[in-house]
Image 1 (spheres, rainbow, N blue to C red):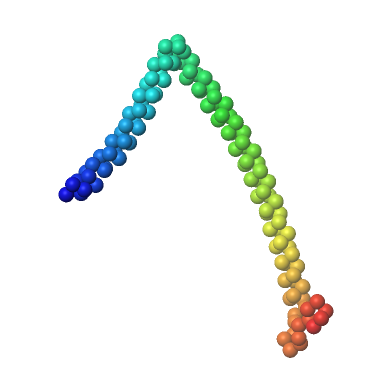
Image 2: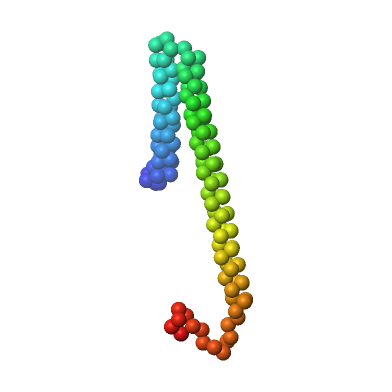
Length: 115
């Protein structure tokens, strides 16, 4: 019964206890970091505005990248449509040629002039 107790009760408690310790250590580190920032006299507002400026700069850069990607996507769409149109024209010409000169079934097919 000793091993069952360890496996069934103490093992999960050790795992969850370890996770809780990691969370508490992280929270304590964040708190210490905030205290250190306050001791250095760096006001919260200044740090916040710097962070906001960085975020706004990143957002503008991302918007520009999105616009470039959309432009590139439109160019690919246009070239793909043009390629489809050319393919449809070729298929149409081949179909027109085959309906204009039907092949008789009793004659052998000639391929590449070798037949």
